[in-house]
Length: 482
Image (cartoon, rainbow, N blue to C red; front, side):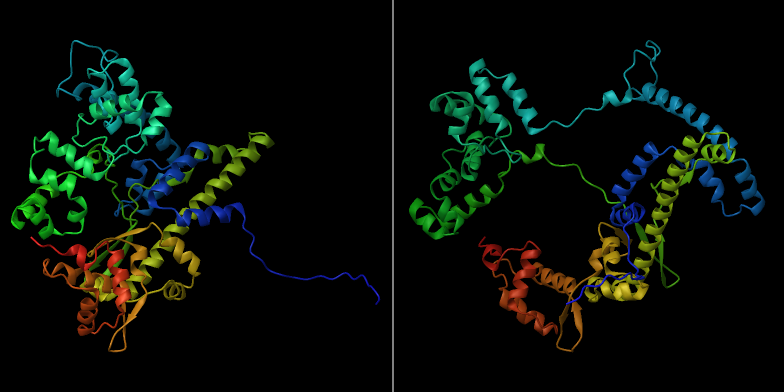
């Protein structure tokens, strides 16, 4: 077999993931908050990039502005920039003085100079954590130093819900103390506020709260300490016989237990409310839905005229010129990528509105099955692009604030041959359970029969899956005997 060497030319096309393309893809899938962080970071790192001052934005977006006015704005951009920077510094000083003068009493103090008065930020206090609250009580307690060292280790092993999660052997290893001393310190810590803290089980937590209320001799205390298993299995009749009381008394005691806090430490660890800012709005105007981008809060970027003039003036050396050109290319690509991201979100939302028109008119019951390919084919983009665009993007509609992914659902068959969106079925299941009799809740099979009466053909296991996704318990867990 002979071997032969040949030279051959072959022309092919392939997509090269350049750094600029990678940046554009990254910006496309970022949420609004993440995009703001990226823009702020670029503003700090790239001197070529700057934010358009608010005065320029207002003047350039006035509806009555004539073309001549736009020319004047363009020619006076450098002067406007200098004036804006000077005015901005003056405004910062004025606001600082205002906040310091009116931060507490509503009038400026004449007895102190600006240097003597605390800044406005120093008046803000951080929220106390559960550990801080417990350590404060420990420091003012009557325990000796040795016991306080053990208590500090115990407090460090209390989770956000207020339960002691460490084993006593671990506490012994960390402190070197004996078991009896540790038990005594735990008992002292359990007397701290909030009631029920440092418990190791739910039963102990509820018992501590009843001891704090002086109800150690009550039927509720007896139920939680001696009949917790029967109480969990709802064997109220057996409990009544063993305690020699009426079933109604057991019901009353159980109702009281439901008023206790099973997570006493949660009020100190609740996270702050996270507000969602919509990326886009859908409003109905003159019978048609209008899509508009939410530009509030997003920086309006532009290229610095100072550096562009310096580059065109040819008064810089080659190394500086190369640096400015590199930063300018990065700034221009960032601006272009952000504009492309906004245009893509706009196009995807327009396509969704077209497919889900009945949902916007009538609500979730009219949500149609929709997949990524439907929108991708409609706007001639790839499915992966649609997936990135709809991730962590929110739209404000007449039906509420919704994530763009909400509109994409699988279809479930109906007796009429059409399909209905899975979210619509979930909503229907939720409505059925909300209207049921709590003493006789519907079984999953009963819900299947009721859905079939509405023309929705669905299996029982699917109803079970949707019910669990909605966080709704089974019929046994939902049943109320009193």
